[in-house]
Structures are given as structure tokens and as C-alpha cells.
Image 1 (cartoon, helix red, strand yellow):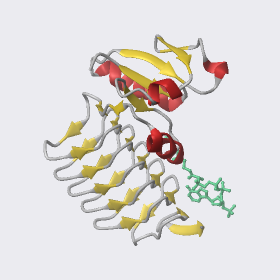
Image 2 (cartoon, rainbow, N blue to C red; image 1 turned 120 degrees about the horizontal axis):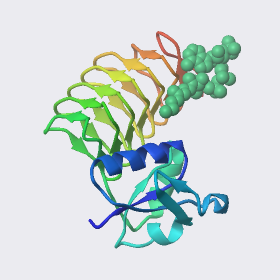
Image 3 (cartoon, rainbow, N blue to C red; image 1 turned 30 degrees about the vertical axis):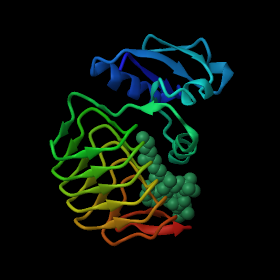
Length: 203
Ligand SMILES: CC(C)(COP(=O)(O)OP(=O)(O)OC[C@H]1O[C@@H](n2cnc3c(N)ncnc32)[C@H](O)[C@@H]1OP(=O)(O)O)[C@@H](O)C(=O)NCCC(=O)NCCS
């Protein structure tokens, strides 16, 4: 791989770039569909143009550096480029862990044995996922979230900052758990749940 292209230029993209640079990867360019961003620089890398030519090119290695889970899903659905998987050197990732294409693991994360993380997921700063976790595609585990062993997060789940999940709990696809929420009983798909215990606010 002769360098990675970052898709997106917001705050999340900045941390993705920092992660790639910490790994020693050359970040070739940043692309964003907002023309107002073109010409800006993030951590020394220029935003050069729209995403479509990169996403359509099988010769490119890219990362979808956009925090919104649905947006990453939409872009990945038609992309023909290859996707890099990024793991910050300070993350502790057991050798049995499997990570999908395009997934990013930020500084200070701990991933314990036999955890499987799907594609285009975000395991954000300082989060931990204990043994035998099953984390779906397009999930975002926000900074400092803590998952006990055998937790399952369905596709597209967003677990807010500092949230927690007890052993064996399951969160249905595209559900949001608010900041600081504690999952102590399974949550259905497609709800927003908050509090301790985390209970659905609405669908
Ligand atoms: C859960 C969340 C998504 C809800 O956002 P929202 O749909 O805009 O909800 P609102 O702000 O309208 O709040 C609705 C109600 O839920 C409560 N609520 C919202 N978030 C809550 C939380 N995390 N814990 C407890 N209660 C919460 C509000 O106080 C409000 O209660 P009320 O109706 O009694 O006044 C959001 O508050 C949240 O926690 N986001 C997490 C953000 C995060 O972790 N980002 C990390 C980025 S890396």
C-alpha cells in the first residue's frame, strides 16, 4: 500500500489521520464532497476534491472517516476502492481479534481475545471490548465505552461516550445507546435508549 486516502474532513477524520500517521502510513490526500473544504489542510494533509473518483478506483486504499454510521454504510455500498484497517500503535489488540475492512481502532483501545469487529466500524479512543465480543459492520463505540465479555452489537449500533454493556448483552441493529447509558438487558433494533439501565426513549 503506497498511502491511504481519507474520505471526510471533520473532527473524526482528524483522529483517523492521526491514527494513520502514528502507524507510519503516508496519508496521500483527503477528499470531501463539500467544496468549501477543498484547499483546507488537516494535520498537514490537503483536502483536494470530491470523494467519487477515489471511491470508484479499485487501485486506491481509503478509509471512510465519517462519524455517521449511515453515511459510511451508504458510501461503502457502491465503493469499488479497497479499504484500509487502522489500529493505533497504543491499542492493545489480542492476536485472535478479527477486524473488518475499513475499521478504525483509536489510541488506548483494548480488544480482548476472540472479539470480532465488522467492516467500517469505529472503536473510539480508550474504549474496551472484552472477550468474545461480536461487533457488527458500521458500529461506532464512542470514547471510553466499556463492553464486558460476550456482548453483541448489531449492525450500525452507536454506543455513546462512556456507555457500558454487561456480559452477554445484545443491542439490536441501528440502535443508539446515549452517553453514559448502561445496557443490562437486551435492546431491540432501531431505538434510542438512555440511562442506567438503558431504556428506549423512542423508536
Ligand atoms: C441519546 C442521545 C442520542 C439523544 O439525543 P436527542 O435525540 O437529541 O435527545 P434529546 O436531547 O432531545 O433528549 C431527550 C430526552 O432524553 C434525555 N437524555 C438525552 N440523552 C441522555 C443520556 N445520554 N442519558 C440520559 N438521558 C438522556 C434528555 O434529558 C431528554 O429528557 P426529557 O425529555 O426528560 O427532557 C444523546 O443525548 C446522546 O447521549 N448522544 C451521545 C453523544 C456521544 O456520545 N457522542 C460521542 C461522539 S465521539
